[in-house]
Image (cartoon, rainbow, N blue to C red; front, side, top):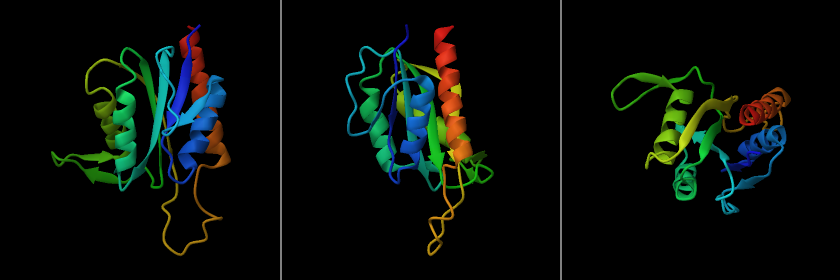
Length: 165
Protein backbone atom coordinates (compact mmCIF):
# COMPACT_ATOMS: atom_id res chain seq x y z
CA UNK A 1 0.00 0.00 0.00
CA UNK A 2 1.29 3.42 -0.99
CA UNK A 3 1.45 6.04 1.77
CA UNK A 4 0.72 9.67 0.89
CA UNK A 5 0.52 13.06 2.59
CA UNK A 6 -0.64 16.56 1.61
CA UNK A 7 1.54 19.54 2.60
CA UNK A 8 0.59 23.15 2.02
CA UNK A 9 1.47 26.80 2.52
CA UNK A 10 -1.60 29.01 3.05
CA UNK A 11 -1.87 32.69 3.88
CA UNK A 12 -5.61 33.40 3.87
CA UNK A 13 -6.90 29.86 4.36
CA UNK A 14 -7.90 29.22 0.73
CA UNK A 15 -4.98 26.89 0.02
CA UNK A 16 -5.66 25.12 3.31
CA UNK A 17 -9.28 24.47 2.30
CA UNK A 18 -8.13 22.99 -1.01
CA UNK A 19 -5.41 20.92 0.71
CA UNK A 20 -7.91 19.47 3.16
CA UNK A 21 -10.22 18.44 0.31
CA UNK A 22 -7.37 16.82 -1.63
CA UNK A 23 -6.39 14.96 1.54
CA UNK A 24 -10.01 13.90 2.04
CA UNK A 25 -10.12 12.48 -1.50
CA UNK A 26 -6.82 10.67 -0.94
CA UNK A 27 -7.93 9.59 2.56
CA UNK A 28 -4.66 10.85 4.06
CA UNK A 29 -3.47 13.47 6.53
CA UNK A 30 -2.44 17.00 5.67
CA UNK A 31 -0.03 19.43 7.35
CA UNK A 32 0.76 23.10 6.95
CA UNK A 33 4.27 24.47 6.44
CA UNK A 34 4.85 24.79 10.18
CA UNK A 35 4.13 21.12 10.95
CA UNK A 36 5.94 19.07 8.34
CA UNK A 37 6.48 15.55 9.71
CA UNK A 38 9.32 13.16 8.87
CA UNK A 39 8.57 12.13 5.28
CA UNK A 40 10.77 9.01 5.05
CA UNK A 41 7.80 6.59 5.11
CA UNK A 42 5.74 8.40 2.46
CA UNK A 43 5.73 7.43 -1.21
CA UNK A 44 3.69 10.39 -2.49
CA UNK A 45 3.92 13.97 -1.25
CA UNK A 46 1.29 16.40 -2.54
CA UNK A 47 2.60 19.96 -2.31
CA UNK A 48 0.55 23.15 -2.52
CA UNK A 49 1.03 26.88 -2.28
CA UNK A 50 -0.48 30.14 -3.51
CA UNK A 51 0.24 32.77 -6.14
CA UNK A 52 0.88 36.47 -5.76
CA UNK A 53 1.03 38.65 -8.87
CA UNK A 54 1.47 35.66 -11.15
CA UNK A 55 4.35 34.14 -9.18
CA UNK A 56 4.82 31.80 -6.27
CA UNK A 57 4.86 33.77 -3.04
CA UNK A 58 8.18 34.35 -1.27
CA UNK A 59 6.93 32.29 1.68
CA UNK A 60 5.76 29.55 -0.69
CA UNK A 61 9.16 29.34 -2.36
CA UNK A 62 10.88 29.21 1.03
CA UNK A 63 8.52 26.42 2.17
CA UNK A 64 9.20 24.38 -0.98
CA UNK A 65 12.96 24.75 -0.51
CA UNK A 66 12.55 23.51 3.07
CA UNK A 67 10.48 20.51 1.93
CA UNK A 68 12.92 19.76 -0.90
CA UNK A 69 15.46 18.57 1.66
CA UNK A 70 13.04 15.87 2.85
CA UNK A 71 11.57 14.43 -0.37
CA UNK A 72 14.41 12.73 -2.24
CA UNK A 73 13.16 9.65 -4.09
CA UNK A 74 9.47 10.55 -3.64
CA UNK A 75 6.65 10.97 -6.12
CA UNK A 76 5.37 14.54 -6.05
CA UNK A 77 2.00 15.99 -7.08
CA UNK A 78 1.54 19.76 -7.21
CA UNK A 79 -1.37 22.14 -6.64
CA UNK A 80 -1.85 25.86 -6.10
CA UNK A 81 -4.48 28.50 -5.51
CA UNK A 82 -4.65 31.88 -7.19
CA UNK A 83 -6.78 34.98 -6.74
CA UNK A 84 -6.64 35.77 -10.44
CA UNK A 85 -8.02 34.07 -13.52
CA UNK A 86 -5.67 31.90 -15.57
CA UNK A 87 -6.45 33.77 -18.78
CA UNK A 88 -4.02 36.50 -17.73
CA UNK A 89 -0.72 36.13 -19.57
CA UNK A 90 2.56 37.33 -18.13
CA UNK A 91 5.75 37.81 -20.08
CA UNK A 92 8.58 35.66 -18.84
CA UNK A 93 12.33 36.31 -18.91
CA UNK A 94 12.50 35.26 -22.56
CA UNK A 95 9.50 37.50 -23.43
CA UNK A 96 7.21 34.52 -24.12
CA UNK A 97 3.74 35.06 -22.66
CA UNK A 98 2.58 32.28 -20.32
CA UNK A 99 -0.46 31.75 -18.17
CA UNK A 100 -0.27 31.92 -14.38
CA UNK A 101 -0.83 28.16 -14.35
CA UNK A 102 2.20 27.52 -16.58
CA UNK A 103 4.46 29.89 -14.66
CA UNK A 104 3.41 28.59 -11.25
CA UNK A 105 3.85 24.90 -12.03
CA UNK A 106 7.21 25.58 -13.71
CA UNK A 107 8.36 27.56 -10.66
CA UNK A 108 7.22 24.87 -8.23
CA UNK A 109 8.91 22.15 -10.30
CA UNK A 110 12.15 24.12 -10.55
CA UNK A 111 12.30 24.56 -6.76
CA UNK A 112 11.20 21.05 -5.76
CA UNK A 113 13.25 19.16 -8.32
CA UNK A 114 16.43 21.28 -8.20
CA UNK A 115 18.48 18.21 -7.33
CA UNK A 116 16.75 16.03 -9.95
CA UNK A 117 15.89 13.44 -7.30
CA UNK A 118 12.08 13.36 -7.29
CA UNK A 119 9.42 12.16 -9.73
CA UNK A 120 6.92 14.92 -10.43
CA UNK A 121 3.59 13.49 -11.55
CA UNK A 122 1.82 15.07 -14.54
CA UNK A 123 -1.43 15.17 -12.53
CA UNK A 124 -1.87 18.68 -11.13
CA UNK A 125 -4.58 20.84 -9.67
CA UNK A 126 -5.10 24.56 -9.49
CA UNK A 127 -7.92 26.70 -8.27
CA UNK A 128 -8.32 30.23 -9.62
CA UNK A 129 -10.77 32.79 -8.42
CA UNK A 130 -11.90 36.35 -8.63
CA UNK A 131 -9.37 39.11 -8.27
CA UNK A 132 -9.95 40.81 -4.93
CA UNK A 133 -9.91 44.57 -4.98
CA UNK A 134 -9.63 46.91 -2.02
CA UNK A 135 -12.94 47.95 -0.52
CA UNK A 136 -14.98 45.03 -1.85
CA UNK A 137 -17.21 42.99 0.43
CA UNK A 138 -15.03 39.95 1.10
CA UNK A 139 -18.05 37.83 2.09
CA UNK A 140 -19.44 37.98 -1.44
CA UNK A 141 -16.32 37.16 -3.44
CA UNK A 142 -13.40 34.85 -3.22
CA UNK A 143 -12.61 31.23 -3.53
CA UNK A 144 -12.58 28.33 -3.32
CA UNK A 145 -16.22 27.77 -4.19
CA UNK A 146 -18.05 24.58 -3.25
CA UNK A 147 -17.57 23.40 -6.83
CA UNK A 148 -13.82 24.02 -6.68
CA UNK A 149 -13.60 22.16 -3.36
CA UNK A 150 -15.38 19.19 -4.93
CA UNK A 151 -12.90 19.33 -7.82
CA UNK A 152 -10.04 19.30 -5.28
CA UNK A 153 -11.55 16.24 -3.59
CA UNK A 154 -11.90 14.55 -7.00
CA UNK A 155 -8.22 15.33 -7.67
CA UNK A 156 -7.33 13.54 -4.43
CA UNK A 157 -9.50 10.58 -5.44
CA UNK A 158 -7.77 10.52 -8.85
CA UNK A 159 -4.36 10.40 -7.17
CA UNK A 160 -5.56 7.59 -4.90
CA UNK A 161 -6.67 5.54 -7.93
CA UNK A 162 -3.32 6.14 -9.66
CA UNK A 163 -1.44 4.97 -6.59
CA UNK A 164 -3.52 1.82 -6.28
CA UNK A 165 -2.83 0.74 -9.89
